Length: 337
Image (tube, rainbow, N blue to C red):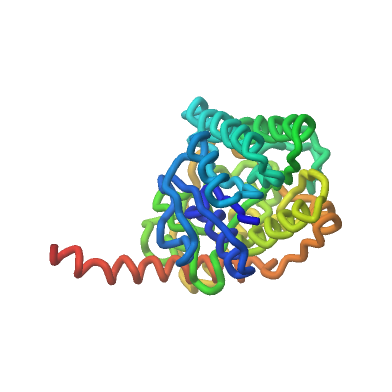
């Protein structure tokens, strides 16, 4: 019962690989390494460099490793980039997912877990957002993920495969043991950027819009620790492997923090009062996204272990410090070349 993790060298995928490895599960990683890193894959876990949309490659991996389940993280995730490059996002997130699903069906894979997003809801009328809320994405990113949800729904109805769709809210933090974290230099996650500002790696931090219909005018998000998110995936996998039915569920904590509240948390944890500036709104940003979490708690028994904003920030800050130390340690070797 081997699990194929696409995007398993990336931020969230690597934490899932760690969780599976910690549980002594057989796992194989498929990653094109465009945003992932070899060093985030645990020793002993096979890493295949390649594209999740390459059906021939996926078919070969299913045969060679006896893949019974696929957990699909690979894709593009930056909302403003999707507005600038919609076709690129539909290709990465929809076309390639279609190819991966087709390979799974052809190869007899029985279980499929898909990394979706709260962006499928767009600007919901009620908060917290239940899974039954209207699907009205306001960015190509959200639309590209919703299309994959539809493909999975129809594939489950037509073939001998079941799927769990997990709609993430804002993922943050890092592995508490320091084995993985958000490493991509161009990542746009608020907590990562704020930690970099606290460490002096950025001259300031931009707040994109302060005129939203929220208590302090800045966007409100539900932040979930990446290790808790990985745990939710393991529970979803266990559910499917026991013969459980297909499900679609939110992944969050059920409470939100504004951008300014997150910045204050980073200042509090780091002890650094860094410069913060107000910038224009970004395209595709809804005012508030907070998850209704009853489904995942009731159906999978999900119980968060790191549901504390300061704890999330502390883990993220520790990871950024580790990255800085590694970069500084590498300088003498680079200068000697």
